[in-house]
Image (cartoon, rainbow, N blue to C red; front, side):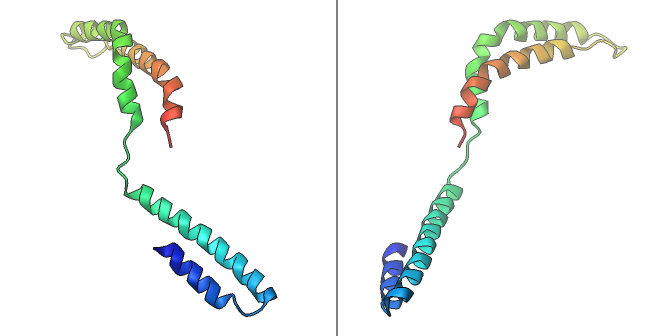
Length: 112
């Protein structure tokens, strides 16, 4: 709808001589390109964005079962610790390292 309006305005205003036409034509063509880009940006802004990393992490979980089981076993061992000195940070990071290693090669091709 915007394109025919711009074309008719451009033809009406730019019909007053050759020098003026070229200056006017270049202005309207750049405006036309900006209007088209704005329309595309507005259209994309209305779309609901989805975090692709979460879906890729879910697909990689079966490949990282061993570190997950080690982490869960550690959590069970540590639950009874009243001193607060024991933790499962190493196992937690091992699990997420496995997930990230699986996700990283696939993620950048999914980003827009």
